[in-house]
Image 1: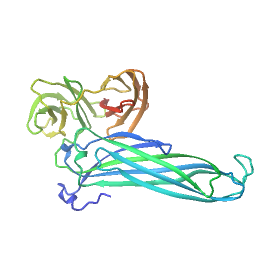
Image 2 (image 1 turned 180 degrees about the vertical axis):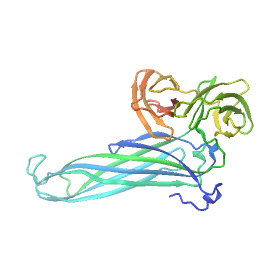
Image 3 (image 1 turned 90 degrees about the horizontal axis):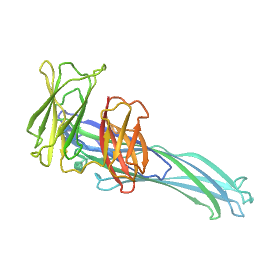
Image 4 (image 1 turned 135 degrees about the horizontal axis):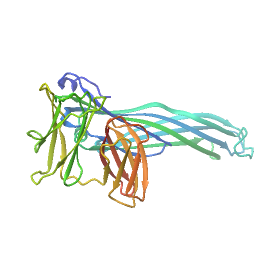
Length: 375
């Protein structure tokens, strides 16, 4: 577990802050998953530790029948192995648990399948209930820092071993739930505007960068100045956007920056928030890599309120599309095949804010991520 102490003493202020991302996985004991977690944005402060936690519940059901001519005491060993790997981890996190069940004293075979004193049916048995796997990284945190995503793979395996006699019939099945959570511990060394809840900058094409942000407690008379930098330190004014809010004083904003011939390698953006009384605050700094590949997907309308449309730049493929909230939780998932267009109605009413779309192409194993606003 991550422990405060020496690392925390380096913080200003003197206690670490946290950002957590979570997702819930449901399976049959032997499924495998791949998913994305946003990296820690260095503009928010200094990352001092990363904690990975998985809480597992596993139920197992089985049928066992003795086929021997004599009675036999049987034991069932149910083994659960969990492996979590990532491009940010130097080695996978592996855990294994074995539970023994029995003795089941079964009489000699009566020749009738599925009944009698030579047969037993058990389950669902709670093999694991809120079993926790956790690990913390306090030294090699640099792979988790950036403006992109860390890819995680979760690979569980559930197996059963029968002992007592080799002449038997056995069938088993499992259901499992994994609550996965990643938490960043960091020192906040940046003074941020208090009302800007999300600010994102992303390359939309080779010509355009999309800038979007959401606010709470929006005030009349406020202005947002978009600033750009070539080095992340010296910023220049681009344009001013007046505050625009709904009845709940929530603001959703979307602007586009046209890439110029003077822009090279990477560009940086931030927002300067200016209130009517002259109070000034700044957003986090967002980095855009101009050399990154174009997205394999296009999304519209943006902002939206009840649906989105996706254009896949590769046709004839099988796509798994997942929508995530800004905190990392899965909102909904849809599958599409042999099409380059997908209409995706929201299955629930989404709260205003920023959401992520991840499109995973099964054959090439490629993932594409983009964002959109809900108003």
